[in-house]
Length: 266
Ligand code: OOG
Ligand code: MG
Image 1 (cartoon, rainbow, N blue to C red):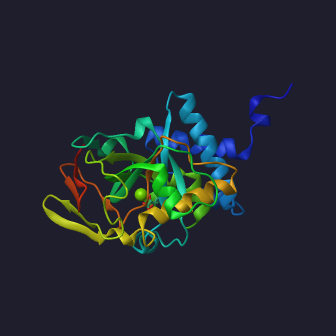
Image 2 (image 1 turned 90 degrees about the vertical axis):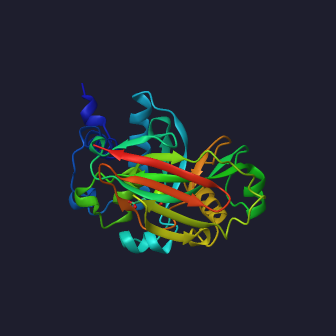
C-alpha cells in the first residue's frame, strides 16, 4: 500500500513547508534554492494548495490581492511583473485595530486602493465592465509577511508560491462609488508616528488602480479562474512597504476615501 506521502505532489509538499513556516513564524530559504526549475505556474499551484490547507484549518476566501503593480514595489523587490494572491477572512484586521508584530516574522505595511465586486468578472474585461462590477472603492493597508529569510526572494515563483507574501489587510470604512471619484488622481499618504513614510498618487498603481483588476482577471483566466462576485480586491501598493516596529502608529490618508489607521504592538 502507498502512504499519503508517496502520492503527495511536490506542490502539496511545498505548500505544507510554507504553511508550517507561517504558523511557526519561522523563516525558510526560497523554494527555488532546492527546486531551481520551479516556474510561475508551479508557484500558483503551490499557492492554491496553501489556500486549500488554510481552508482545511477553517479559513474562508474573501478576495484577492494584486502585487507589483507599482514601479515603487517592483523596484523595492526587484521583480518585474504583476502577480496575485488570495485573501482569507482570518487576514482581516478592522480599521483602528492592532497588528501584533511578533505574530508574524517580519511584517511590512503598505498603502493600497481596494474594491468590492458585486458581479463576477471573467477573462478579458474592459475598464467599464470592471466599474460596472464594483460596488465600492475604499482605502486599505496591506500587511505583508514573507516566509522567506530576510524578506528576500529573488524569483516570482517563490513569492507566488508564498501567496504573494499575504499576511493581513486593513480595509478603510469610507466606501465610495467607483464612478464618484477620479480613481487616477487620489493623493495617498502613509504616515508612521506622524512622519510621512510614503506618498504617491493613485495612478502609481498600474497607471489606474482599475487596470490592476483588468490584469487580475487576465491572470485568473490563465488558470481557468474568475473573479467572483462579492470579492474584496487590493489593487497593489502605491509606495514601497514599511517594516513595522512595536509601538508604530500607521495612518493612511487618501483623497475622498478618508483615513485608515492601525497600531503595531509586540
Ligand atoms: C509581494 C507582494 C506585493 C504589492 O502590493 O505590490 C504586494 C511582496 O512585496 O513581497 O502586495
Ligand atoms: Mg500589497
